[in-house]
Length: 198
Ligand SMILES: Cc1cc2nc3c(=O)[nH]c(=O)nc-3n(C[C@H](O)[C@H](O)[C@H](O)COP(=O)(O)O)c2cc1C
Image (cartoon, rainbow, N blue to C red; front, top):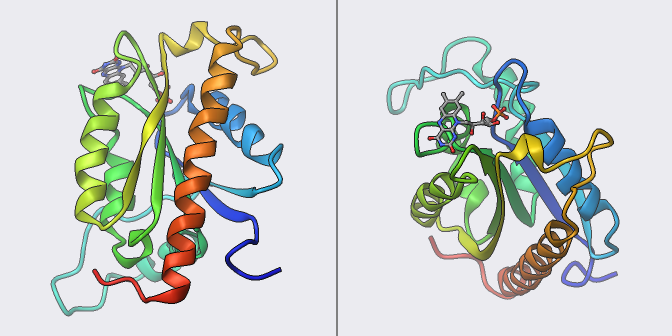
């Protein structure tokens, strides 16, 4: 199969690392949607399982010991992705610090790729976290997808099996992933013809 028509490789970045977090319920539901599709495969990158250092080296200097080993568990997977889904809660009207840290450790791994957002939180449904992420990802030469799926009071939206109680969320997830697929294929095809110019 030519590279431009092969299934899109989607990295799902789980942004919460909090003990007792709700995030895995949302992440598993979303990655289940990807796994049901023939045009995508999912790689879930859980930042709680692959923690990254928070101290950056001086410009031009080697990072502290252990940094390369930690990055080796994340960076190649971001580089291999054709597209991303960020699953993010809202913390204090924005997104969690570990997600920003993971974003900041990388640069060209984001270039010319689409990013979709699934958010959750208390009253806000995480939508303010998403709007902050759009600005950040624009700086990193990524394209953000217009549609979102958001869950306010997320813990009340899923049953004990991890299914959503309102099937409208499943419909929204499909629409989100359809848009991500369009952008993912379009950008991958474009990059196969011309190297991305950052
Ligand atoms: C530090 C902190 C700040 C939060 N700030 C907000 C907020 O600004 N808006 C909101 O709707 N929910 C807020 N919440 C609620 C979280 O979005 C909600 O608890 C969510 O489940 C957190 O994701 P997690 O369980 O995967 O960590 C906050 C929670 C924490 C821990």
